[in-house]
Length: 146
Image (tube, rainbow, N blue to C red; front, side, top):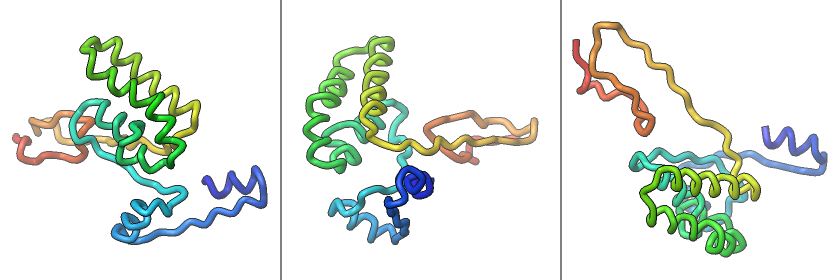
């Protein structure tokens, strides 16, 4: 999609799409050879901080790879907000901080968010023990019973 729309903006834009093995990808990723890539993240724990630190921090796994200009910008703009998260337990204040971070990310086009997977769960009515857990995909069959 990016390739097609970039060409519509300017026919001189050339985007080559390629795939590589996971080990080659990691080598190129850490060597900062990838101008753009598709990658996702599953929560380590069910808290927005797990994603905010990863993507927005100047030291985050993804944020730190956005280049020197981003790292310097994040030190002044994102890192103070991340630090503020640890100073409050007020859910309203936390929501405001995360909202501000997302607005900064949107205004500065940090990422192209392309998908949020939605799952449909179907089961017989006599099966018990399943519950929706947005931080965990799939089914834990050990919790199910009839």
